[in-house]
Image 1 (cartoon, rainbow, N blue to C red):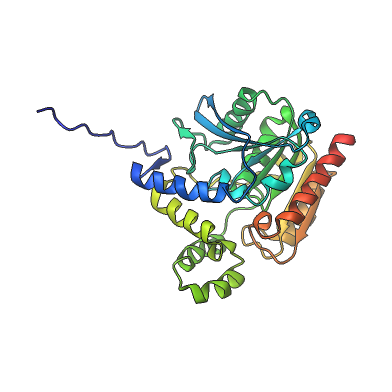
Image 2: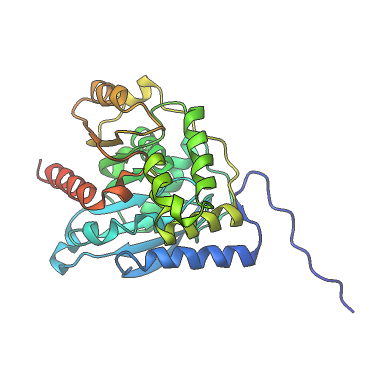
Length: 307
């Protein structure tokens, strides 16, 4: 009788799934969210030095818009491209849209080499865009994805027509209040149904009241282990190097950054930057107000393209 096979222990510097069963449950939760957004034209995998990156391609509605500069979406930490389900219908109606699953986060990408260091993160994204044949893009990032976008604008700006940052990392050191919000929000997903609307309003957290979002977050926490440190914010000198047209969107009740501080600071350091605060939202303006955010982003990109 042959000995049972065993898997090697996962590397401590590489994100990984706990087991196949939990991974498959998470994928099912992802697919429930994807079903609420625009249907992907296709999915593909591209190879980089850091692993395989899974990509979703959407729109546009009018084939004549295929030649317009594409939008590339980079999701936040602990999630995947499913987070963009409220935004893909509106954005892909007018432009080609690519949503990337970041290696090292739970998604359908395969993480093989660490890429949390700023230079390596920028190399990963540049290689992924190159493999997709994208020479010029409007890059959009949320939360940790915002740090990746800022980092790209600093280290490898050559492909960037513009950058849009949605309540991003990379501007301030992540404080205790943000981690406390994450913990309490996760705990609230287990609250009785009658309490969830009140908790969602108090926490500015739509995850609690959207069943598919709640199932997605709970499945992610169970299934995946992230193995990277929190990124450091860019210094003021690094921010001053950014020349790509920049659109900063902050939630009025954000706990990741101090919105009023960044509303003044970013345009001062990056001349020409467009910065705004969205009311009635915290850390996830693109989920709370998708129609508004889609319109603002598309208007900004149109202005950039005709400038």
